[in-house]
Length: 118
Figure 1 (cartoon, helix red, strand yellow):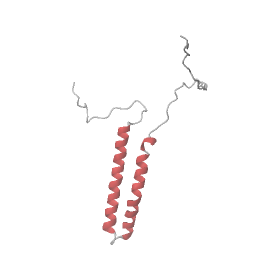
Figure 2: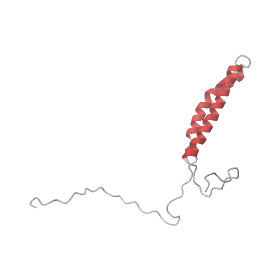
Figure 3: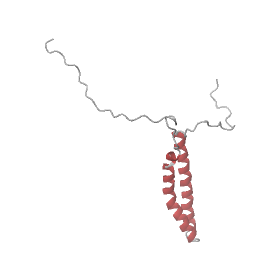
Figure 4: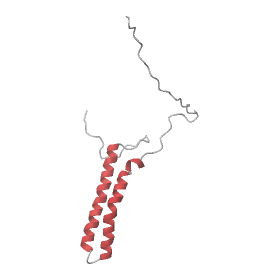
């Protein structure tokens, strides 16, 4: 049996579950979004440095982008996993009522006493 992936270039299979993406895929996606944002920030800083004397208004806009993008990138990267959580189906059936809660009191179980004489 070959371990190579079949149909690698073909269309992806449809998902039949409402399961969210795995943690590894989520982290990889967040890292890519953060990297893209930092690349845009780098372009903003370079544009600011290049255009400072010639077009100061454009340079100030690029500077504002270079300052604001890291904050936005971190907030977006941290919010990724929580945004994917959807409605979780109830464990009980719709027509059944949930069972009442039972309060359990802690008890102390002592070992049986041994006879001192024996």
